[in-house]
Every structure is written in C-alpha cells, then in structure tokens.
Amino acid sequence: MTGDFHAKVGRNNQGIENAMGVEGLGEFFNENGAHIIGFFSVNNLVIGGTLFQHKNIHKYTWTSQCGYYKIQIDHIAINKGRRRPLRNVKSHRGVDIGSDHPLLIATLKFKMKATNRKIYKIPRFDTTKLLEEEYRETFVFECRNRFAVFGTLRDAEQTINEEWCNIKNIRQLVDRVVLGQTVTRRNPWILNDTWHTIKRRQRQKLIVESYEEVMIITR
Image 1: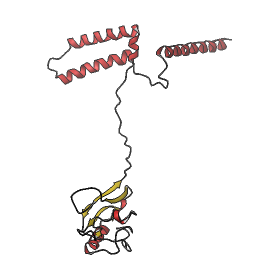
Image 2 (image 1 turned 135 degrees about the horizontal axis):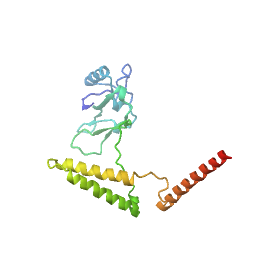
Image 3 (image 1 turned 180 degrees about the vertical axis):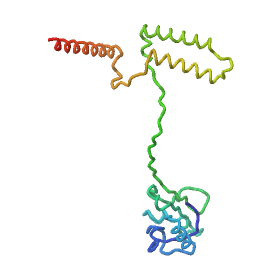
Image 4 (image 1 turned 90 degrees about the vertical axis):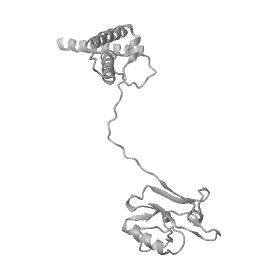
C-alpha cells in the first residue's frame, strides 16, 4: 500500500510496534499520522519507511518551497506477516519527476517456489545413424512405404492442421522405429565408432562369461 497520506508518524513507536518501526523522521506524529497508524494497526500493516536506518536526507518525502521544512509524509506499507521480502525503503532526491515530492522506492526480494509442473520434452532421435548406409536405406524404405499408404488412405475432408498432424506422426514413428532416441553421453567428444567398439567388446565379454559359466557347470 502506497500513498501521499500527509501523515507524520515520527519515530516513537511505543504501544504501536505492530504498525511502525523506530526509524521514522521526526519526534511526533500529526492528526493524519494518528489516523493511518490506527488504520494500519487494525489491518495488520506496517510502515516500511520506519523500518530501515538511513540518513534524514533519504527519509523525508516532501520539501517546502523555502527549503526549510523537510518532512516524511509519503509512506509505503506492507502486510506485517509478509514483510520479509521488503528489504529497503528509501527516497531518491536526484530523480526529476516534476514534483516537490522525491521518488520513494521500495526494494523487495521474492523467493520463487518450485512447481511440480511436468515439462514436455521434445524427443531427440539419433540422426547420426543416417551416416551408416544400412540405417539410411532402412529409413528411406520405411518413409516411402508409410507415406505411400498415407496417400491412399488420405481423407479429402481433413483440415490442413489434421493433415499436418498425420504427417508429423508418421515421421516420428519412422524416426522412433529406425533411429531410436539419442542417449545422453557423459563424454560427447568420443566418436561413434569408438562407442560401437565399446558395445561390441561388451557383447563379446558377456558371451565369454556365459561360456565360462557353462564350462564350470558341466565339469
């Protein structure tokens, strides 16, 4: 809650600690100050400008034309139970806003809560397999056959969006069947040939281990 309340609240907060701090400007409050203090107390609000220690030049929010009177009558209030994000309230005299009131700025810092919303992940297919002739020929063969069937079964009354969805589904089906999804690798600098060699050695190792187990059993 912000506003030009024409209310002096001072720094004496005895008995009204729930509505203000001790860093206000001046010693006494005026009639409007008494009104807003009572209003803030009833509505569980606290005056932010009285919570933070600053020099007086960063507290006053109005200066008389003669420059003699400098008082704090503009206020920013926040709910007492939610005052933790409020980090600072300070007036800035150097900002030219065409008014005898300097700019009053509040600094807040919020901590965003993580949500449990599921994020849809776009499937990534292993297109590196297309570098191999065997996979490339299979991919072309599957695409040609499936799109040929789609052309014969195509419904002339389909909208362009429905037709696009069908084409996309066919393409993703071929990608999933022929290419498969990419596997996250911890060492992306290792070449595909090296990965194939590693997999082949692993298969050979399994064959040897299974053969040794059979020999032990038959003995």
